[in-house]
Image (cartoon, rainbow, N blue to C red; front, side, top):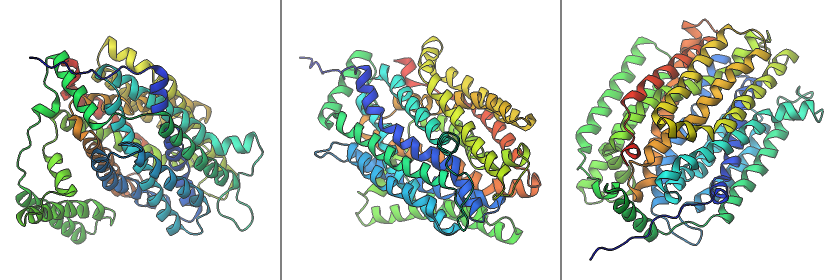
Length: 508
């Protein structure tokens, strides 16, 4: 006798709206960070070629936090649910960090607060990605990630423009008061962001009910019946990973590269990359040791095992993500320096010209995020007419060409045009890779794999933080605009890489 399993219900527009609304607050935090932290660092005395190494806290934190939170949320089920406890905890911590960040008295304090802020934001953000896989059927996932893109764009457009709006609408001072380092408009923007972050995430926690693990298991079996394709959790085969051998190889490679950096007198930032390789090797050696003494059943071993056994689609998307996020990181950390020096003609952080240019960068970031929010719901339409891979490739080409074009623009107003192309790329980056990935993941490891997928977002950012400063200092002779050109080329490479990606849901 065949058992008929209950299918995952289709959610209404408002249900998808409510489950995604928290991303409005999360992006408020990220947008304030992206548009203003370089400015805060420079105001506190950082040199332009030192900024990438100060930014490294953000990707390193995501690299460590997201897979841990993903694995923990996969194993959690309590009165609040599976993912919602992490939404709420991260929102509370991130809101506190936003309140403290703009009042940092010294550069080292600001760098430390960036670390804490990013860790807290990641605690909230990672489960939101898995939330779409939990709550939506395969044919609604593209719409779910598009809704997240809409809220990300909407939150970012307001948050990025907040310092500019506070100055031009409410006449808040845009230059530091005597004896102060950070302007009042920047401080107020962070205080408003803290309130919005917590309120938006709280809305999702209150207005959304999660499915239990038993319901999710039944939905996955129903998917098998309706599609004729076995659910991923049944076809997923765990291979026994050789942790010790791989760990020794990574550890030796890390030590060798560290030695080469030291003896060659290369930039100290490269120690982040070589140290990361060494640390990854040590983790695998430790996992092998724990397994040998019978203590292999732990979170670290589980995450490393899942990393080694990741679905083929994730490995293919990893290449796309690498080049995409290298480009985005160059945009975030160098746009302020590039625009203020090239277009506004000042690198003096205390000058009116510099602060006017820095405020304009906030407007530019608001434009690309606003356009991303507008086109977010157009992407599923294009994907239905073509497919998700082609849609994402078109968007990345637009973003790459736009970044390259900024090198040839000298008018502040004209800089708005390439921001439209960046906005199209950003909307797709926030939705299409995750929509493609979700169909290849086992339901009971959705959070873990979404966290592991973040590796391929943060590793290129760490690499960018490690080498871009050296490139700007030596190769580009201090010209930050050339870093944006490098980012544009990187995004075009990402677009070409999509030809090798297979989308499991296309077969379904």
